[in-house]
Length: 544
Image (cartoon, rainbow, N blue to C red; front, side, top):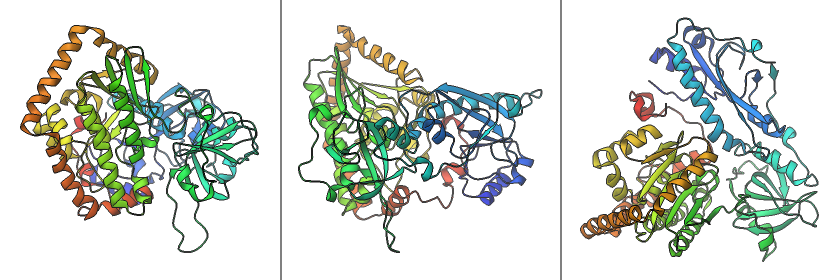
């Protein structure tokens, strides 16, 4: 198996010639497949829409129009985009509360795509299989690319309509608007409480989010990106918490009354929180795009310490509706006046969370990969007594961006999987599916794929520790392991060694952290496919 980034038609053709594959899979491809390729090799496009849907803005239109059902289709590449015969298709319901485009991609779209791929691979060796022309299965609907004119809204519109438009563009490209006299792209929107203020007025701030009055109701905006001015040297903005983007344009002392703050059930901005369900306490890391900034780490640390002081029997650390966590917040670091100093503050803050989880002795701790995770976000939960994962999530346990990583992983990772596997995971730098993760020892149990049933399953797992015998054995074993390990080398020693490496990465830029971070934040297209992917021949380590 080989992987190639589809940078342009020539790179696609060149990769196909070198690999000479039996099958080419193109997940959510934006580039046109060259005629030379699809005529010579079986080439399948994974399109994020149901049979008959065509066009580059499939999900944008589906969310904007309030579709109640959507799908994914595996279709064979032909001359016309999205018009080839169908190999497999899956459909799924869309919630009435509009999802964000990014959450659909990372959730039901990804799950449906993998299910389609599994069916495709089964059919590949069936000599009697013939793909079906799409017009035999559904009515064809060709949609144009969605433009900003299609996304535009007025603040005099109802809050629900505004939120739907913004979520259809989240996390890219966002929706152009103006707030407090600043031209921005808007993201991360939630319906707020009723307001009597003029539409478009910023009426409150909370945890980095701003509350903007609408025609009816109001809208919480968690993140914005400033639109650069027209000068030749103008720099592109960085997606940041809305209150930071508007900081110089808001009145002093603008805060949100308690009644205006979104509830936990609404999952509004500022979503690192603690909630208790009977004998079980939950610390929820529902951080935007999985990025845990310094202040988010401090909130998580506060929530975890609060959980430890409660009389619950178990503490569950889990993600929210999106990714579990991807580690430190590269956008906040890139936007800082001193990126190295902000990166250092961020990594030491996330280490404090890891340390608190490792050293929690009085309650059973459970960490749940409720969504996919990367880098430090994979390492963060390994201090827990039990690590579980939702079926279908992907773990990327390697550090990129020119960082060697911390999160006390030099203690927790070998303790879980042994030194040899730990070294392999970090040097092979390949994603791991949950089945492989369980086999390697990264996770102990796998729960249902659907987020709703997974949450119920997770609570049942936590309730096992109502059994006093099981709970006491777990706590006794944890204490014995900690006493044994930390008497040989304290956590401070592990952290000092990790941070010594990170200091060189962040302050001396010895591995290109500055350039890699900048390319990631500003979405620069890669110049080449990493060798670790292009030369990969170990499918057990890759999802699917």
